[in-house]
Amino acid sequence: MREALKDLPYAVQSNMVLSDFVALTIESGESRGELNREVRKRLDFAIVTQRSAFPVVGIMLADRVYGRDRRRPPSVSTDVEVKSNVIVTVLYINPKTVVGPAMILDVLKPYL
Image (cartoon, rainbow, N blue to C red; front, side, top):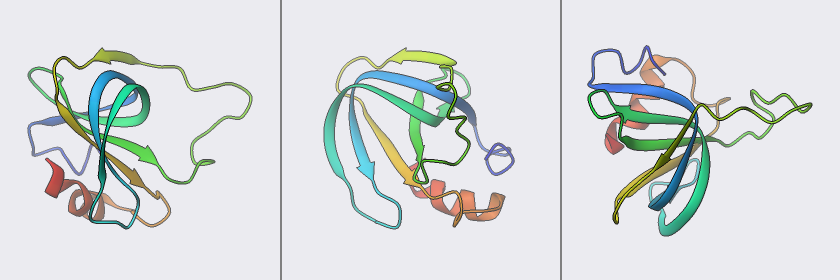
């Protein structure tokens, strides 16, 4: 993911928790989503702006066993409270079908 975004003004953070925001949730393989107010949501990855580190796109891995250690939950690296009525796109991506930097960029680019 970092390799796919290397020439763009975004960075990738893992295990981020967002609080108090509006999520545009888009399921894997869908082109439309729904808006929901989220009180707190843990994301597998977040695409953030390089300067302000503000979340632009949240990514949830659609395959629940991917990258998980069942003995302990993943530690949260960043806890961000999103102020006002900001909409953050939350994409559910199946890591088994989206492989390689070019394919990842194709999936993310419409939402950046």
